[in-house]
Length: 105
Image (cartoon, helix red, strand yellow):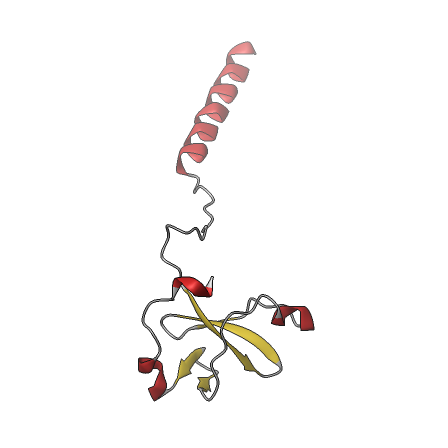
């Protein structure tokens, strides 16, 4: 009887070690002064504030309230928005700086 329990416990420990070894570690992205900053500018579209990265992709990270205006960075107007692709489309994007000025943050 003890031999069967020992086999089950050893099998359980092996499975536990195997799953622990292959488990993906949770990672978080931290924006620090040393890292490359991906935030570029903000737009107002469809009654909400949105952030746009350096590639023109749109991210919905502002809450839907008036407090979102305060932390929003520089605003760019007159851009076309492709809702299906989630991108900003405009010939004027090439005139915006390719790197974020350090004074923005």
